Amino acid sequence: MKHSLLLLLLLCPVVLHAQTYTSPDNEENLVYNPSFEAYVECPRKIDALGTLTTVEAWFQPSWGSADYFNVCGGRECGVPKNKLGVQHAHSGLGYCGIYCSKTDYREYLQTQLKHPLVAGRTYRLTFFVSLSEYSAGAVATIGGLLTRDRIYDTVRSVLMHKETRRLSDKVSQTVATYYMPQVVNDYNHPITNTADWIRVTDTFVAEGGEQFLTIGNFFPAAQSNLVDLDYLTYLLPGAYYYIDDVSLTCLNCTDTTSSLSTSPNFATPSPTIAVPDSNLRVGATFVLRNIFFDFDKSVLLQQSYVELLHLTEILNRHPRMRIEIGGHTDGRGSTDYNQRLSESRAKAVRDYLVSKGIDARRLQYKGYGKSIPIDSNETEEGRANNRRVEFKVLAM
Image (tube, rainbow, N blue to C red; front, top):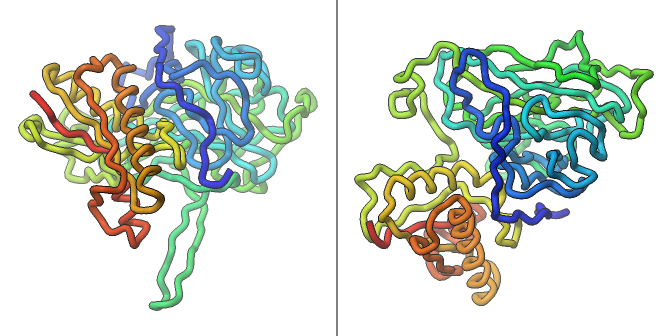
């Protein structure tokens, strides 16, 4: 599956109003869609080479195929019974599932937080897990990793931090090290319960700027405290866990210290759109820097959720504003092909905004192909900058 993410994203979201888990003391949960209740379509099948595109705000950072389950799902993806086991949701109607494995095969869940963490503040991460009885064993070291940068790799093994070090003008070396998640289940207590949901929780002090949460097993099999259990059916090749009700809260933040505008340590390596109202004027154009598509297609991926949410909020704040959504490609490929691709991607963004309640009459879309580059097409970085979606203010 070279460069591809194969499941089609249908841009018709359904939000369920079910009873969901509430974080302790009613603190603000920094996680969007924490109990996986909001989805763009009901899950229909398990695809071993697929990707997580049906549940709002959550995605997978590697080619290990995380799964989504819901009461509305097909036979393979239902709740409580599904292809990978039997379990009721901890709350609500849905949950996700990942392999944490007896081997080094891994699956992970990732999401972007509502805002970056503040340096020096104490946070509590909590999520619930349940082992599928179809598993071939259990592990202990399931955890949550908070990072400043979005993690993505084309592996199906343990995610590792890779750093390229230049030794000379012509020689460089890539060094891979294991990530150290801030919150990890106790090594001495493997999660073996298949009937109930087990809470994984701990506190940590933020370095500042962490904006992405990744959940999974970041340790090699030999360091995961593997156990075999007589009551497991061994229908699956490894340890498969259901995940539900993710909560990340600040224990000592105030309204000012948790604010983005007042945090001196706030830094966003992949900044989402933040447009002051004073800059919104007719003719102004803004780049949507975190819009992600299936390779060579116009399928919007869930990594785009936060950026599109912010654009929706801008449009809701200014109900008279009309915009044009413009799609752009890099310089590779034919003019006709790039024109069609850029237009279909601009339309996909328009359709998503309409699905969120924005009046279609306020939204125009247009494809510009490769006709308006903003950087060189001679480098990968330049081509990445040229592949973009923008919006232009037409009326206020």
